Length: 373
Image (cartoon, rainbow, N blue to C red; front, side):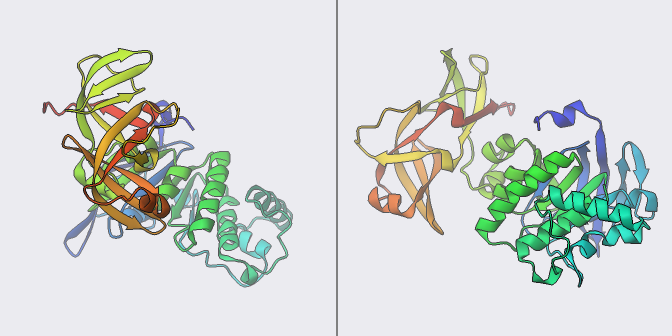
């Protein structure tokens, strides 16, 4: 979906000055949040940031201490049963009932008095959409975790909701299954065109599923926008640490030619494909996974990567099967992620020299409006 979706459509769901306090402690304090019709909005944050509480308020499952929620411009509340019937939810665990897959998917339809023939048709159709055609008669208690969560999604979608809530739906999955299901969920949600709020603490999951991302900290939304902007160009040190990056570099546009923007970052020249006027002060960043490292003094292979920087290793952080390396050049810091084997082969350790290579297309850049030189 196009990143400007929220600008082109009226908000289907809006929160205005929503606050939630528990025993005098403010756990949610959101001035405004808008979800455009048909978009998937991912809410990221650490445990205790207020994500699930905000989800419950927007889903009319909890009354806020202040503020209001609007659906299609009209105020709604937890006691509004008509509005609540427009909402469906998928939670961390599928909570499947005894019986068949069809019994589970049809549960909400039975509660709403939908006739048996229509239930059968709708259950078959939604199972087709979630990749489980023909599974109606399978026992729900024999399903794997991933299969159970797809049944839970089908149980929500069969209600044909206007607003879908997904609260950490893949948090209990192993990494390989989570990655696979993230792609499946992304395709399903895009195909359904349902306004969706997707709460997660996993950046990769959010970037796969969402049209837009918001990051919560201490009950507030501190960053919001498309995936590249929010995860690729953090606005401050806390956000940089949260997304696994160094703070963005500051520089100035010094030339533009052949589709490349040249930026002077105080002793380092970086090229980007982002076009900004000559002389513009900018923030510049590159995701760690977009940086490739070579041995100092090596003859580099021919490639389309425009940025070649001789750097010094500042810190090395093992992370499971990979290693994150903090690099410095002329006081500027950025990071790279390499495999453990590559880290050993390059002998990456504090003080070691290496060459960082990355494409101009990988460089995120925006104008610096802070007024600080």
